[in-house]
Image (cartoon, rainbow, N blue to C red; front, side):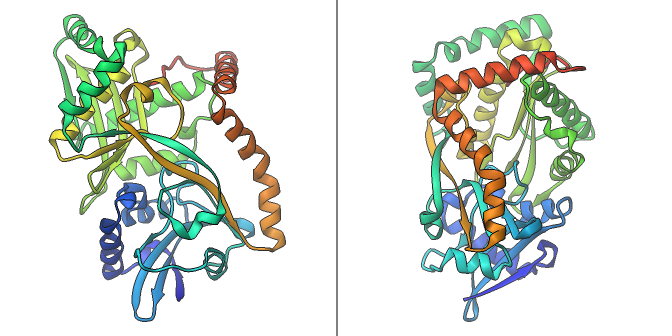
Length: 367
């Protein structure tokens, strides 16, 4: 087994083709976060991004994308943003995870959204969490009947849609905005999302220039089946809600949904997801992955759950121990909150209260 570590820009056309071929063979890898185009785009903004091209004799049998942080600490590509992580590899090949980490020049590789069926990492998983999904493989109508039967809020959405039309004009939805106004609409959606982060006491991701730059770059990415996907909901000429995510292999992970605070009474977040599911199903999307995290709207919309895992592959070296000491307490506290609904509710209320008292906070509403 040989591990050749390269910058993503150095991947050849043949290697990218092999990566995508391996990805197609395994359903759990059908996510744009594990597509080569995502890693290559992230590398423009995160220069420590690397890929290990894994060879067995003369064959390429896998690709391991990661970020090589200081002290030999290995992180997922786009740390803190990627909702799917892991190896893209052939099913009939196995190797030692620690040997791979060592061959990549790392002391440790940490993950928090490891996709299912990554057997090479089984012994290194510390906890697993549900990631709610909208399954559209049987079509929109089948999914909608299921969620409508169990949620009074979903049953009320047609009335809210009609009220929105009556008070603001005809409602229309764009699944993938590509015209000259798309960049401006994206900025509006990101401003709404920033306001939401601030109002709820969360860290504002878009205060980091690399994240904002990455999102705008991804909007322009159209390589093979991979592309950035900006979905917009309008009432008349007014933008009501939007979502920016990615699309590949028939999967759309929800990434950054947001809506105009003034439209809160219409449940625009739910209307956006409903319109997105309807249009996406008609356009060949099979799965909308809403991501890890316990939120009411996800429970109302989901068909079921996939599983993502958290853990670390650590070598017995001092730098791995140092990395553990710096990150373990925070991760442990977050896991405890995520597992306990009462703790989650208390933590959410504390963060929202902090957001209300934060100087200069704009009003935003969670999608």
